[in-house]
Image 1: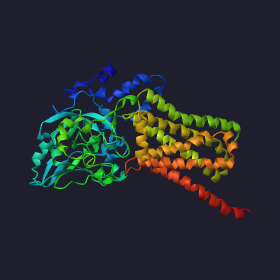
Image 2: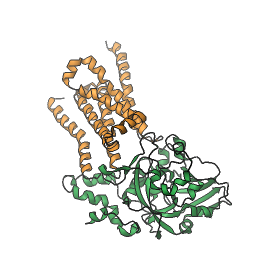
Image 3: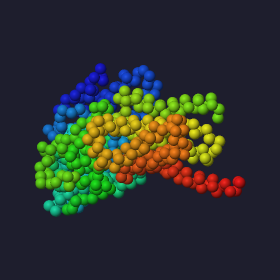
Image 4: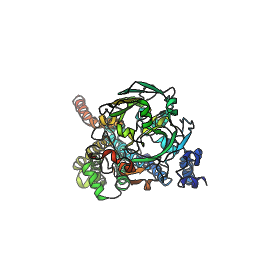
Length: 328
Length: 204
């Protein structure tokens, strides 16, 4: 019975945390494989399953009060919390997709402040609890497309970054915004493992940052962000490849020139500054025409990738007159 | 090593080489390969191929270092053929789950993407080795020619490692351990030759 319920298309207008009991979506795969595994694999099954998907260990678990948002994507099955929290690219916590979940417990997200620097009227520091109360938190369901050609559908919680930017009082000379992530080797064992220029830096053009879809994000599935998903605060830019959506932000800089960004600097031919999802511009190592939906069964994973990840109606006008092949 | 033990060991090696494949099939049928099953199968078969290739290439240097292990030569062909088997599964994963059997997509990939070119090269180099792996072929080609041909295994392993490095993101070091092992095996050959030549005059 439980198995059938989770496979139904979920009514997306409702807060996701209201419909699916957590115990069910956490264990979706366990239920599905449970029936099939009853026979021969009963002995090895559970051990291997636990290797592939270790029990959800780190959850901030604090319930957030949220309101629905008209900006949510509708009609697509949500990726399970299990997959959203156990298939992560967060190199500060390790390069393997399962490392962030394993190492998340080392991260401390309280106390936490975000400092504002650069072209602003006055430098400021926001406490995370102040940020959480700045505006009503909204449930925003977005497609999430990784540059590695996989995708998810994630029910984020947050409010438009533009609301936060208004509180920062940037000067007219501020043309770009830069996000810097936490880089503390005592909490983040991956810093030594990956040969990148830390701290992780990402950036947006000011009009991109001010777009209502750009989300200052504090949670998912109605609760505070698990550490491996960028707790306690991150950005989510749903029409760009995932690496643009900086995690665990400690510093925001308003700058007059295009800021240096980590992956762009590491391999400029592979990761552009804009990195808008674009099926017509291949990554040097693979085609971006299609993507693998996480959580789908192996022969049904592949689906076409949409221009601007399907958010073209809202964001295409930001790029009128720009050559998106050159400015990939 | 008596023939009976060799038979027992061969059964064990077959089981060890087939067990990962069985594991993969069982989990594929159960839809239990993690969040991204396509990537899981890709990495599983790719790593399996490289590990078997490295084991295969380790046989000869090992025999030269420890003459008492000379009998392990009787396992080399199996290891090589299993490397080819997993390499073919890896290729099938690409052809099926990435290219969707589309010839134009494959041609596009092979010509544009060097990591795919390198991977295909590694597999193509294994084909003549697999085809001439029979005792009949050794007789037909003659030991010397056969040996020369089968040095392609080194080239195939190098192409495989290059494929791995070009496939991962810049800055990621996951291919390093297997690269170091392969490097050790590659330099073992000339070093052992030099060593035995140095020792020869003294012992004669």
